[in-house]
Length: 235
Image 1: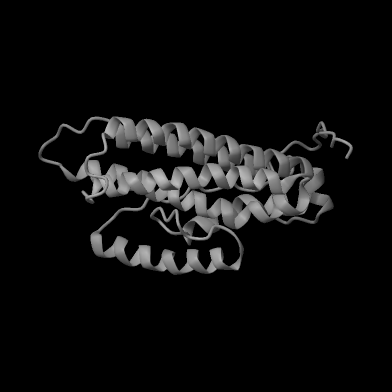
Image 2: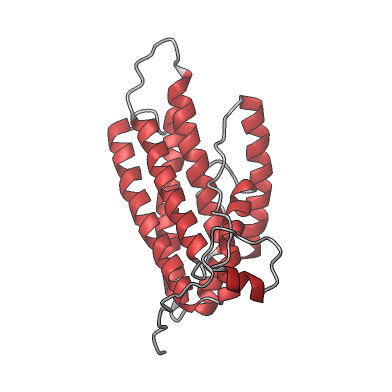
């Protein structure tokens, strides 16, 4: 498996999962005997999106800033897209629960903005991942998919657009609000979907496994396997 391929797979799978959860949240719910379905589907989307945004900030932003030429500009573009999405997610939550400042917002227009901003955020995130695959340390890339998953399991489950997003202040704020969110999730009986798990790590071939003395042989692997190595652009 190419270095970082599991990260790319996990991010793509998470984006598909978010698209599916948004589709479920925006689908008509006509069963009058099950009024909570609308809340559950929308809450599931909000929790998954909020959690993933926080995990990207925890795991990807610092390596991009450090390892990627012009990485700081990439990070700022991503943060702009993520903040705009978070602000709108907060409006969706406010509209869902009937808060006064959002109750008159038309659902159709609100979801149209979410869809557009989610697409922009996904694109900015893919740019981060692509830059890391080109410039990031190979040993670190192999661990990032699991780190994203681990960070999502500990992240806030509600949108908090006004929290600091980077630095120590951002780290502390995410921890505090993650604890608070989980308390209210339990109190309100809110169902939070599980994050997308990264694909299991495997070695490329039996020969590679032998050379690294891995006792857990992948018996489906080829004896030897050739790869095309991507060329890194010259600085």
